[in-house]
Length: 468
Ligand code: UDX
Ligand code: UDX
Image (cartoon, rainbow, N blue to C red; front, top):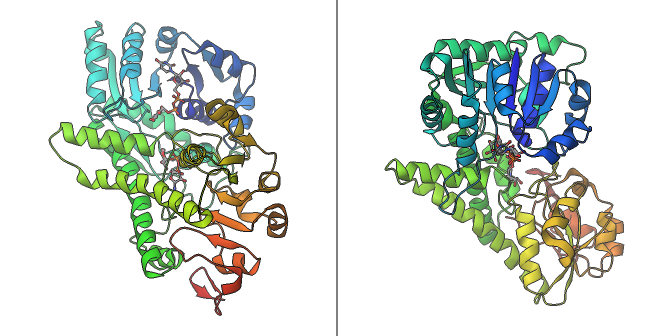
């Protein structure tokens, strides 16, 4: 099938590359010429596992890059819209990009096509896309609008796409559902997974994935509600972590006990410095705004956002209480990306903390395995960048862990200790066991657990909720 994907961001580019790997002919359309040139020249603009392989496998044959949306629409049976939906000042999603895409597509809808929302959009968007296309003179019989939300996490987007927990097809017309079923058939009939060149299956993946067919509005809500629920899980456990700190309990042990209940599940219960990224902050805000507009005050989500903001402030208070004053302190920061495994710094809680530290007069030397180039564009020369965690730690008054990169969970602690001026580690992602850090000579602060000091090692070592 020939498919056009509009927008070559994290969602559009991954979707385009994966559709090509399933065997479709894909045109990825973007209005940013520079980006198109880079993609045509073989550059991979985002840090995403397996994406370089897929792009080099299909670029120039089954996957082409174009600026001509009308032509793409004319030549395709399905047009996926994956342009950005940034928040407006009032927290609503800005749908002007989606609207201009809908207008432009209209010129290419001569025979029957399905226009599919992939971007996260408010519940009434499909209706608006439909209206815009009709206003531009297209016959109602020539198209349907569907919603086919994505649940891609950055860093693992390719495997999330090809091995999803479910495929949601939201559409009010059977003929459009059939087009979408055909597009995903290599996954749902299992044939893709039998190919020798298929992307390797991750643990936990149930193949073939189930298809859930819903109304368009339900599909739009599934996406919003899923993201809001996951954000709520994170804020919930961060609130529990704060109680743990007050009563002297260990949040990791609590997570182990709570998450073992299969009704709750242990995933997305990692406490830290709060959620960030291009989706959760924006989508929770937008879901709140949509609910308010529809007459429902979703106060629960206001609280989710409040706890998330507060979590960063709590971490800053921890840094202050560990170091007393911040002016003139040299701080080593590990992690700038909004989470591990990506170079994305959008709404990164790590960068928020760094900026607050700078405002208080600290000097920051940071290291991130992937996000330093992007961070440089934002924080410029206000911080120093190091080539490794050890270089960042060299001569620093304390080490701060702000992103959950695997690399940071496997540091040579002896070397870190030698590099630091004072052996103080403030871990915003709970990557280490407090007792082990104390045994290595560190004063160690983390989230939802008591601080540990070298001269106060508890007599019983506890790891993952079990006595060691
Ligand atoms: C975005 C949204 O942020 C997310 O909520 C949604 O689910 C999918 O789209 P992302 O892919 O990361 O996520 O967005 P972004 O990196 O902003 O990429 C959008 C792309 O669309 C850019 O390459 C931009 O140049 C392109 N674009 C934007 C167009 O081609 N036409 C437009 O009118 C606007
Ligand atoms: C998210 C959703 O998971 C995905 O389904 C959706 O399509 C897009 O938004 P992503 O933004 O890539 O994906 O990141 P995710 O892995 O969900 O993490 C989001 C934020 O929450 C990060 O800042 C991360 O550090 C934080 N997080 C995540 C926690 O603090 N604790 C957790 O247990 C999990």
